[in-house]
Amino acid sequence: MEIGCDRGPAVVGMGFTTMRRQGRGGGGLSPWLPTGRSRWPLLRPGPRRTTLLPLRRFAPAPPPPILRRSAPSIAAAGRRTSRPHPPVLAAARLSAMALRSLARQKVVCFDGAMGTSLQRLGLTADDFAGKEGCNELLVRTRPEVVAAVHASFLEAGADVVETNSFGALPTVLAEYGLADDAFDLARRAATLAREVADGFATPAAPRLVAGSMGGGTKLPTLGHIRFRDLAAGYTTLARGLIAGGADLLLIETAQDPLAVKAALVGAQAAMAAEGREVEVAVSFTVETTGTLLVGTEIGAAWAIVEPYPVAMVGMNCATGPAQMSDHLRTLCAESDRLISCFPNAGLPENVNGEAVYPLTPADLATALAHFVRDLGVNVVGGCCGTT
Picture 1 (cartoon, rainbow, N blue to C red):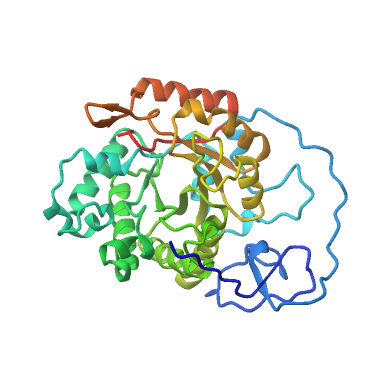
Picture 2: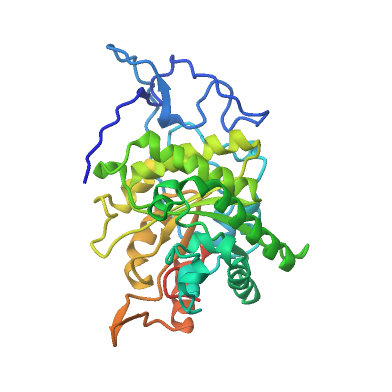
C-alpha cells in the first residue's frame, strides 16, 4: 500500500472572514449562499498565512430540542432552527428541489439493490465484454438488462431509481482498464434510468433519478489517494450523471468523511461545468462496530457534513435495520435535513456456501415503517439483499 500525502493549498474555514474567495466560472448559476460567502465554507482555498485572522463569534444558543418529527414536518429541509451557525443551504436559491418537493407530499421510496438484482440474472463474462464483475459496463453492453431492473422497482412502486454507476469512479474503473470511460458510462447510466423513469412518471406521481456515487476503493484518510485526485474523479462521475439527466446526486456507502468532502467538491465543480444545479444527498455506512470504517461516529460524521448544502443525509448498507436504529435516532434528533434509511435485508448468513439475507419483504417493511413513524425518517429504500 502506498501512503500519499497531499497538502495542497491552505484550507480556510468559516471563521476567516476577510479572505477573498477565488473566482470560479459558474455558467450563470445562482449562488448557493448570499453574496460574499463561499458555497462550500469548509473547503475554500486561499493562500497560506503565518498569522491566523480572528474567528467570528456567535452568541451561544440554547440546546436544540429533540423532537420526534413526522415526514411532512421535516420535509422542508434547508433552514436551520437549532444552531447558531449562519445558514448555508439557502434552499430558495437552488434551481432544483425535486426530492424535497416530493418529500413534502409523502414518504419517498427509493429502489432496492441493483447489484443483488444483477447477480440473480446469471450473467456471463460475455455480457460484461470480458470484464466480469464490472456492473457499470452493462449500461453499454447490456442496457436492456439494467433497464429491466429499473422497471421492476418502478413497477413495485419506487419513487426514485438509482443509476447503475455505483462504481463508476475513474479509480474503480481503472481496475478494469476503463478509467477513461468514467464520464461516458455515468452519462449512459443516467440517460438509461431517465428514460425508464420517465416512462412510469405521471403528473400526479413523478419518478426521480438519483445519480449513484459510491465511496470507491481508495480512502484519503487512510492515505490511499490524494484528496485532489479523488475530488477530480468525483467531478468526472458527477458531470456524466448530470449530463445524463439525474435529478440528484447520491453520495452513498460513505465510509470516510474526507472522501465525502471530496465528493461534495466534485459535485459542485460538476454543476458549474454542466451549468445545472441538482440536489445532493449523503448516505453513510456504519459498520457492526458502531462507527464508519475509519472510526468516525455517526454524530461526528453529520457534524462534518452539516455546513454543506445537502438535501438529505442518512445511512445505507453494512447492516440490517436492527443495527441502524440507534444511529438513525441520533441523525433524526440532530439533523434538520431529510433523513434516509436504506438497510440491507439483515446480516447475511452462510447457507451452503452462499450469502443469504434473512429478512423477508414484510420484515423490512415493518422495520422501515417503525423508522418513519417513531423516529422521523422521510426517505426509505433497500440496499444489499433487497430486490
